[in-house]
Picture 1: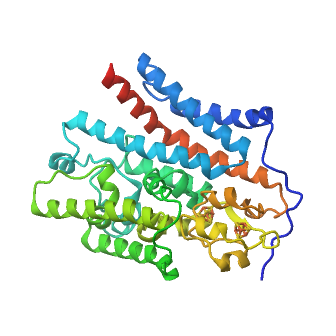
Picture 2: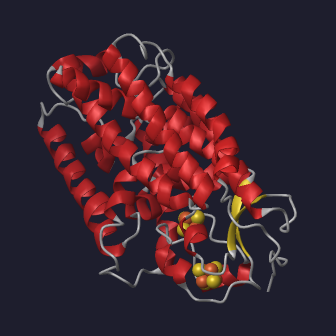
Picture 3: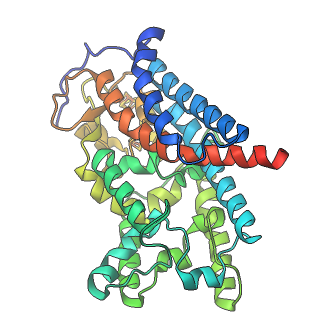
Length: 385
Ligand code: SF4
Ligand code: SF4
């Protein structure tokens, strides 16, 4: 049985208003510059959207720093950004084409906005057939494959699997639905289901390489419902649309409600499985002080990713699927779970380690996906103006 050394001398979360403000100021500078993209101050409406987004995001970061509650404020931002992104995409597409669905001519021209979920399906066809199996822009534009790959690599090397709770706003839908009921209706989940995403990943990678199409995106992805889907102009597209409605209703709405788990992320997402493996490269992890832990079991029932069980409490760490949401850190009555920088002593200042993690994590969350909030606010303002 491994033991984390005692952390009894670890400081409590930052409480002083002044120190919290000081610790939050660099984030204000980072997000202020990242959100000040092209057109941010072009009109009164865009200026209002910029400052409103900046205030909301930085107030949440300040609360995260001051209260020591990571997941509580992360979830507010994450869920808000998921809704804002869906609204922003849909209204943009409606404005652009007068319809939500991607048109056949956009597919022919290879102009479909790329999504990071497709990345695992691109590698083998690109390597062996020199084919990009996604009808999107390869370079140029914010939603091109090259830009997404750079963001993915940067996020993977800094926050690792934390990508799924801090960057992939699509997870915000499940995060929201999984919090609606106070206790789960479905309580018993088979532990071997943890392997399912790896099977989905393998299937998606191999079938994509064989068919030279992005199979998971074409046939399964529930998030097509809130991003982009092809206009239904054939029986095949009608069947695919029916599958998207089914997978979204089941995996993103019904099962998260009934289990209080992010079921699509935990059990079906091929990108999440790839991120579980790639996330090993990142410097941050969650650790458990096995001596402080009173085995109350609170974290086991609250982890939204099925990453904690009794073995985790003995090993001193969650399963590798942990996406560093921080919920267990917030809830642990013994302060036995903490963010940890790999390679450092487990006695290192716990709050300092949390702040070190929060900076890259919140930069991805607010600095990049925060633009969706700006866009959504601007569209609402323009609509009423
Ligand atoms: S919530 Fe904290 S004290 Fe309770 S079982 Fe988990 S780590 Fe141990
Ligand atoms: S182990 Fe903790 S940080 Fe990791 S996913 Fe579960 S609740 Fe979140």
